[in-house]
Length: 120
Image (cartoon, rainbow, N blue to C red):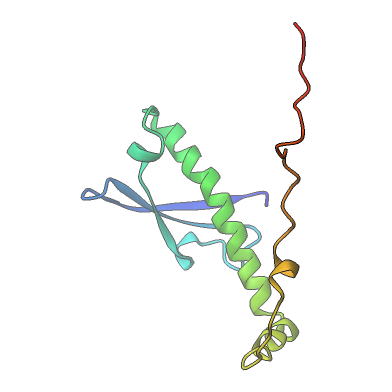
């Protein structure tokens, strides 16, 4: 992503939120208004930041993630083979042994082990 496009739609006084949407040069549209808007609460997210340009930059940094998600979703939506695979999962029943899903616990010290001491 080389360019992020950001539109600040409104300020909601009741929540102290800036409502913002994003697009990028990797999304199908470069118009942020074509995408979901998100609420950012600068007073809670960055309480010590008073510089407006810095607040806009911090929102834009978060917007990079949202634009990347939008581009991934758009790429997924045109992958008909993958969508068909997921559709074919409907109605399937599977069972898994819990041991196959959860990694084994890491070894811990038991009562018979001693902790090496370090002399200073």
